[in-house]
Image 1 (tube, each protein chain N blue to C red):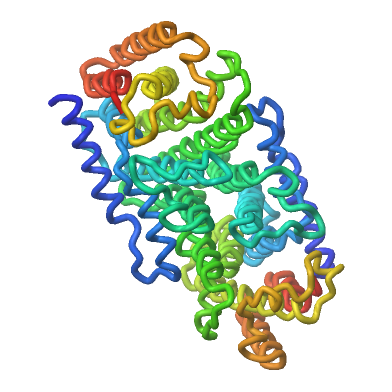
Image 2: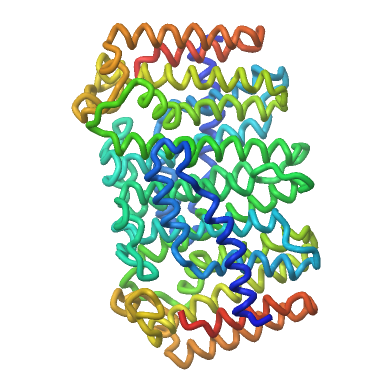
Length: 297
Length: 297
């Protein structure tokens, strides 16, 4: 199966669940649920759920489990909430995402704040549901993985640093620390969640997967920066060149275009080398890694 | 010990932990941690942690445990995040809370949004920390209790309904449903978390505590409404009469002052009668119930 097919399969699988996750049945204020659905069902690539599923497959030959599904859904809820809040007027102030009106445009600002809050909560609610034949200790470790990656030492810290440094000069190590939190923490958590759902408890293997996640998170961001310069507005779903326009610090700005491409290539090689240590089960995740580095949107 | 002393003891106990919970050490963007501390350490009554502790004492004679402490801290993180977000310009647009500048005034709007997001996440992170000699299944059930009360079927739903009905006429049952979500869900969760931390698993006893929580949550809200009319601005820490001014639906507006007082009295009696079934261990929680009904701020 090609990586595109694998990715499509993961996407279909998680979207079937996301579609059923939030209903307006018996809702006190159905507009809240509608706004949550708007934030969640927006045509995303579902890269983080794919990383959960392929992290799982890396660690076991067993078919994808209900616990892996819960982790895939939970991490997409976190990612979606972060986008809804990032788009707010007080933050990045974006009216469009993937060619569609953002949540506060389609609804209103208060509803977007609350929908984001509720999506974050739903991630933890969904992953804490009691499950037959699942060790509660495993679920607890997974909840902790998700929480540590999402909060004030992870994703939210990265966003806070980013906002307070718009228009300011960053060093390469500052830029790297920012992206390690802002996007890297959740990408790494996705892979680890998949491994934990598969019952992986070997500290060495988990550490190698963390290292892989960190490399791929950085590679993802550099490719994002490159696409902002080289990509095409229609394919990206957001105005090309918007980082430059907003004077955001980027890898190409610090390393030059060629330097950024070389860095991306090196990270790619290193990430694949780490995965190869896991044997044939790593094939799909290597394919996804290639896709992340070569994607055009 | 008087209820005031019990409440002071609970408050001291939880505040010692809240004080140490968030540090700016090694923080990528220390302003985020400062804003989180501002939201968390603001002189609150710490009523929800007290309900956790006294719900615990109701179910066991064992000394308060580290798990009860984690639950008390976690629920106060949720409560604090909700206040930070409620105060935002797009929501209630409040500049003052307990006589102090609100988070977005002391910092800025983006930082307040992110500090709220991070406080919510911290609640789940704190309660999912692995603990010696604690059953992971118990911790998992507690995480679920907290998540269910906080999200789109609980607190956030209540806030969304409230915002979309400012200036509109509500029926008594709508008002009741709104407050059951907005404040009741978290108050009930606090008592249940305490019981769960004490190892309580008897479905009947847990259901009675849920019923108690629902009664006390409503009583809390009616007293809030009454204080807004009868209270004193300096004691309240917010302008007296602000509900009326904002044309917010309240119990006194629907039931009249005397009707609201009678309803409060009836809820109080019913709540205490439920607790009395638990025997002498309920004494402190009965005292706290009396305090909630009679408080002047």
